[in-house]
Image (cartoon, rainbow, N blue to C red; front, side, top):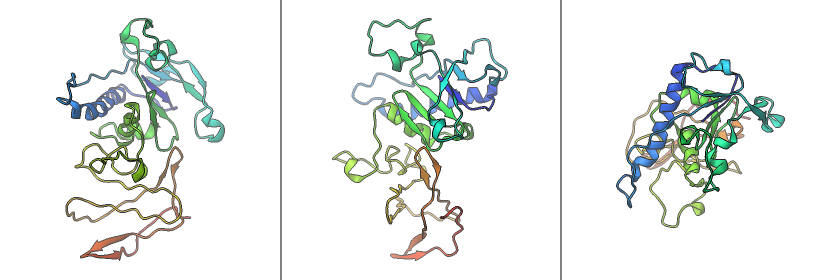
Length: 263
């Protein structure tokens, strides 16, 4: 189920790409399990069974088989952040697996084809991401800007929470035996499940911190962009920063970095 907490309209092409995007993220996780410990599944089909929106007219070129829900509740987050829309679209709770899975005898109205397992939740002006067994929440702009990407960092990370995996912010929070780095569940450590992709660092935001990007081979780069994000609150910045690179065993400062928004 897509929960579209945004005033933006959705074209038919965008809706089809949203379904394809979440299909890729689910299968990036599960493909690694094929052949492991009796895992019985191959490719996992993913279907958007409905669209929860504030106004049905936002679903452009609506198809006969598309289900649209327009009920809503009040989003408490809008009290503290007026950029967040007050209206929070909802789908019927009786169709939610999250709401009813504890009852082994529960019967979903309309059959299993109408049931939804999770929300893919897009919110205007939402910073960062949030996730759990209820679904994944990101900004509407983030989702729309990543529809054609193979790996969608925040969606994949939050989906990991849906599978029961926690964040790994500090070394002592990691499994005792460790795991190969980077890992997408070490928030900020990796942008992807696939290690061929860029590596991200983590800034705990207390005191003086050192964030180091360590690669498994040599690369030649002409530009590096660094962003600081504060969970659920968008872009944040430290009071000051320096950027250095390792040159034959010696750290040297990058001359004249351009920084925006430093306090």
